[in-house]
Length: 215
Image (tube, rainbow, N blue to C red; front, side, top):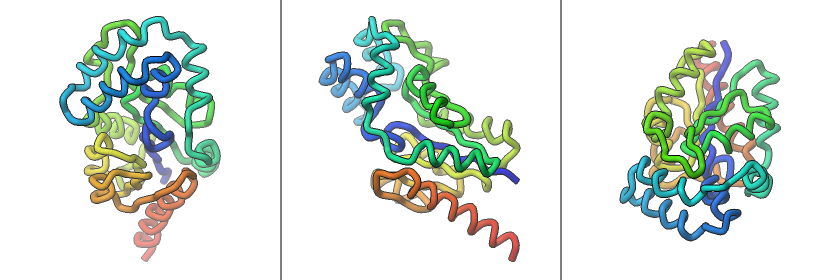
């Protein structure tokens, strides 16, 4: 049987968030950082965040997105991890609340699929096209069905409260530089700057399960 590795993006694959990095390159970091802080405190809903953020991004083009993607502080080893997963005949996916137009650029690094919020700079968000933490669960279930794997054959990698719903339904989870709340419910935790280290912990969870079945 194959396996599925599901990765969060912000805080997991990169330090910080894509929205903040995009805003930094647009010269509006402070305004969007304030929105993110209010969102994190629960003072803004997901829709209210996008309704306030997207107008600030009006005029953003592919050049800004490409520049931001290239200058973002990513963990090392991302492409190596996804290549190893593919070489084993397994599947990788990213599920994030950040914009689809940003996460799509990870496809060139070898991730099997990428799912983000379908939002457009300067355009009011469609509530059906944003992603909440709770949305990560049905998206993951859809991926499992597509690839023919069970929850026991999945590993989720995340860093914060937005990953808690998915971590609660999957038995194999890796907190990557995680918050205290996420580490508390994760199967294992990784601290560092190399995704390979987190991935090896994920592999160990799958291998332990395989040994248990053989016994």
